[in-house]
Every structure is written in C-alpha cells, then in structure tokens.
Image 1 (cartoon, rainbow, N blue to C red):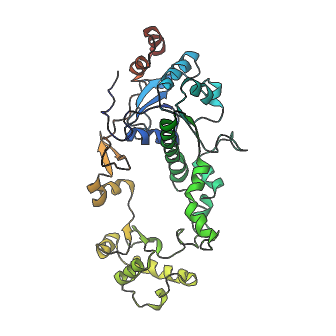
Image 2: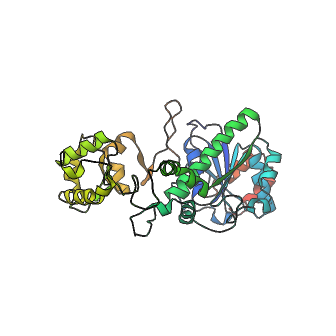
Image 3: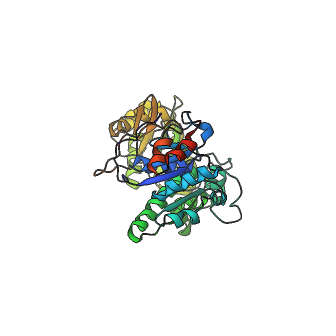
Length: 382
C-alpha cells in the first residue's frame, strides 16, 4: 500500500534526499530536512517491509522503499535513485558503502552535483574511525562529558542530545544544506564528513573561549554554566519539584534577590565572589525548599529574574508558552515536537506520519525510471 507524500511546503521544497536507513543522528538529519520540505526517501531493509516504523517521530515525513543493499540489484536501484537526488545520507562505518558499491566516488561520478552526507561518531579517518561507540563515548572523548556534573560525582548522562542530536544530526543537516548551496552555485557536489566528536567539540566553542580568558577551570561545578554558580543551577522545592535559576546578568540577579527578599543581604552582595558561592548556594537551596514549585511560579510570574519551572516531557507540551507557539503537537495520539526553525515566508507543513516500511517502493522506483520488470523483481514478496 502506498501513501501520498505531504503537499510541498517549507524552504527545502523541491530537494530530494536519499537516506540509507540507519539509527540515531542520520535519521534525525533526515527528519530535519523533511520537516522543511525536502522529499526524503528512506531506504529500509526488505525484511522489515510492511511494519510500522520503530521510530515514529524520527522517521516522520519520509517515503520508504525497501531494498537489499547487499543484493547487486538493490544497490543498482539505489544508484538510480541518487542519479536525480540532491543529497544522500549514510551512517555506516567508514568503508561500508564503498564495499556495497554505493560509495561517494561511484555516486559522484554518476551525479556530479550530489552532496554525499556521511554520519559517524569518530569521522572517516583517525585511530578510532573503525571503533564502535555511542553518544556517551563520543562526547566523553570530545571533552563535553567530563565538564558536566557535580564536583566529586560521576558525570551524568545528558540524554543523547549533545552527540547524536546536536553534534550529529544537526551538524549533518547544516553540512548538507551548506554543500547544497555550493553545488547550486558551482555545479559540483562533495562529501560531507560529519563526526559526532567534531560536532561535540564545536559546541564547546563558548567554553573554550571562557577558558582561554581565564574565566573557566577544568574543575567541575566551579564555573558559570556548570552548576557552580548559585545563580545558574536548579533547586528543589518543598513538593519535590525543581526550579531552574539562570540570572547571570546583574539586573536579573537583582530581580532574583528582590523576589526572594534578599536585597541588601551581605552574603549576596558580590555576585561573582566564587569563595562565597557555596554559602550562597546553600542559602538559596534552603529558601527554595520552603515552598512548592507552584507557589514559586506565582512569586516569579512577571519577574525578570530568569527563574522557570523544570518540566517533564509531557508537562512541557502543556506549558502556556509552548502551547501558544505550537512547539509540540499531537497527531494520531503521538506527542512530538513541531518543525523548527520557523520560516515566515515558507512555513513548514505539519509533517506526515512515519510511513509503513517499504510502502512507497513501487512508486519511487517507477519515478526513478526503472523498467516494470525491474520494479516487479525488486518488490516481489514485499
């Protein structure tokens, strides 16, 4: 069964991307491009054809074809897809697509304008290039994980936001769109080598700048943005909730003290006195523990003290600000984030649901110009 792709909308309308099925950051890059209007064709495994996607948000907005990349006929069909594509996404270990006959040299020879996006943890070269790993490993080696957490505590796991999503999928989406602009200007495509270690490192630019100017130390929980500063951390409330306090600038810090009745307290007179930070933090913790989160929300409502409640995933969608902007939406009972960023001239459509695996195989292969007998052979049994 085939379902029609969504109507064109978004700034990437008219672009076609072939995504070789993978997990994590590669699909996230594909989702970001699809959200903004690109026609993303995901190549899935024939053994999974007919099943619902295991990742209903990450795989949204695509068309899905089921092809066996290890079968020469399947690989040839993928090459036919890339002939008219603007970009390709692959997330295998270095050298895998070359062994499949789908490497960048082959694809770029057939389609010189193609942008060939490669998503890995360690990059295409280097001593660890062939070593398995996951987000936690990449951000550890890149230096981010070691900078997170309390003094003397094990570094916490920051979901998989830094490596997989920010340093991986977003970096690849930026790389592909940048290379597409170059290809449009010059007629020449190229390979984009997106590594999560590189992407994690570049996200540390601000921290390295602070360190270079003597405003950051390698000691954890002793710095401005790592929980060391008492005015930039979370605090527990009496009902077990939490508040996020981020009043870095002096005017916002003054607003915090006013809301808490601490204006003029000598302990808080010097905001950036690091020797006083432990005592300041302890005092603030005791104050915040005296009321519920809702009570504190009422206190800070309309204030410029940069204090907000800490929400869980479901609760965040119901927050009045997120609700007003439509930051999250629910489709077919599935809560998910809306496309971002927003374009006033070419707004994105509500993404189509993740497709049934392989449901567009016949349509896409026919569009690619494969003969009817080839399509029949490749779709037999799906």
